[in-house]
Length: 100
Image (cartoon, rainbow, N blue to C red; front, side, top):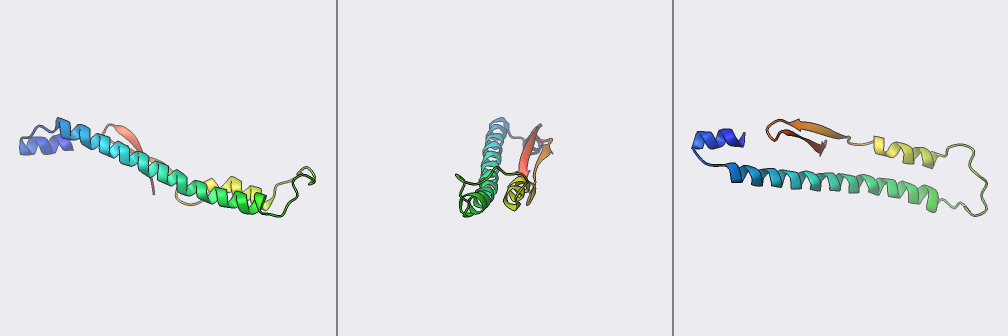
């Protein structure tokens, strides 16, 4: 797309395209890191509420024989909420990740 605009305006956009690609890559990384941070906060809260602050005496408790509500929430938490997905960006010739 950048090359098409450059041709229309009769400009050399090679440097601009490289800069734009770098900016998009940096923004993509920032969005991904923010998404992971937000999703991990929910996991940390579930673990703290269910495991650490649940009032269980872990030293003297018997070995688990089944799954608890907290363990089920921890296991299913990454599957809830917005999904991380890959989008193909043909103008950049690569695949990008983004949050919905």
